[in-house]
Image 1: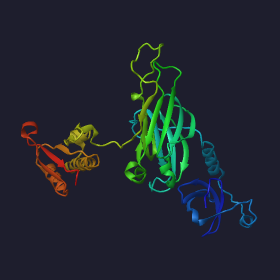
Image 2: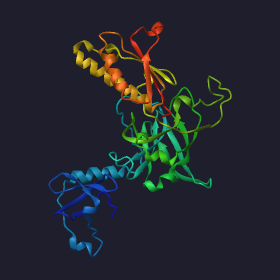
Image 3: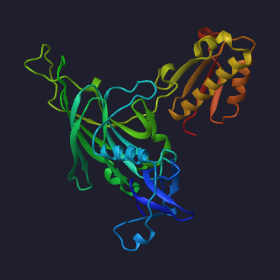
Image 4: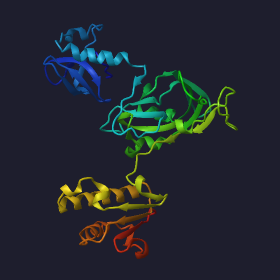
Length: 360
């Protein structure tokens, strides 16, 4: 049975009941009880009391629950269908732009349960968006349009897992408005198409600086890539700029620990000297420093496999050889890589090269 916040329910396996305050997943809800707190409960263990039903009235009962719990949920329900302001979580490193996010309701089991489809305006502009889905026959289905305030998001709809494929292709158009700016932005016109298989891989659901929940996020347009409008009023004239920016959405990928160490697309150089990894390292003993260095080493190795980096250069120094020996022990546990000392001409004897065979 489907429940919604505000439903009066009774427990099937124990006495009493309460009021549903929140839908946690497709199988579990929060129930406010008379003792003054909320209890996560399986939907299969609840009986909905429908006061309009003659049969259900036999089970009707008044529950003296905390009104603040219900009021908080009612206020949340009033926001449904409206844009809500974004909050900053962690470092604000996400590039300003327009994003499309698929957010699972159940953050513990990302591959199950319902999903919220959200438009995110991570910018300082007011935006007017038009959201359209494309079916297999090439027909356009207008799903929603609205105004988003700066740094806000809107839930377009909530869909079930079996409906994901019908939401995997479409188009988002955006107009940008600001009361006072030194430039006009051209309208954005972004197509998106997602392989349905992406929805069933946990690694595709990532956290970001503007979402608390993990989500599959598509970049519809970055502000840095949206050209200014060519206007006869502009101080600067822009040549060969299309009236509408046409582009394809790209999936947002999680940041890699190797990003700061990339020499090129396939090679990264990592300095494992403790002074490069932590501040105030002089407060640490030798064992603590070694642990930090080895942890960073293993994280870089793992990231190389995920991001298909073929060559890693680890600068570990000479010292007493403890760090290098511990690194070799870890490298020997892998079958699909090779390692050896780097060129003495460039690194001396204090560095090790690791080559990863990504085809195995």
